[in-house]
Image 1 (spheres, helix red, strand yellow):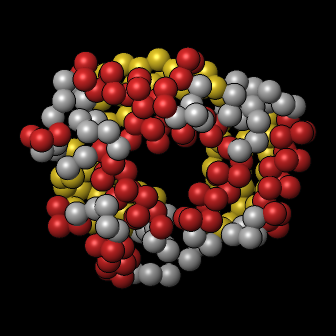
Image 2: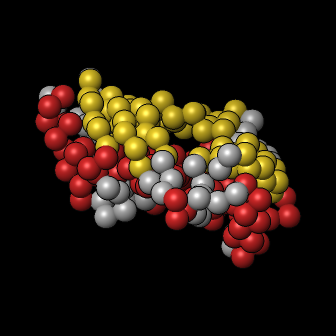
Length: 217
């Protein structure tokens, strides 16, 4: 198991390696596998990338995101401009059911509401607006409409685990109740944990995924 110092060094190296992140403005502290990011970034997209880069590092058990978005003057936009741009971005993305999504913008922070059939549609909605200029943060209140029985969902998720090369399906247990999935077991990295979550979310009708997977060093 890595020491706090070793893990801090690995996270700093990964942030420096990630081209979409300016690591010079980011502070990293580590305690018992929990990494806290602090400092300023120039966009919400950079904040998101910094968090994801940290999660990729082997040994990271959790990430506390305390990064603050400080927009440069060139990226400042009014809420009206941001709202109009968001609506256009959703309309032009073929994977987003834009007629079901409501958008609210307040001081650069976007709130998304609505109901979709699949988790990937919510993810596509978030991806469509994450990199827009002027955005300081995004909150998703989008819900996924249930469509399948618990036994059918469980069977599909377990099948997806077996087909995915990145996952050791025998180490992961899937429990399904109504439209909620709970994952138990042990994985080797945060990336493997993310892949298990992605596979679970890909099942039709899933509204909640509770990830109780343990990342083992």
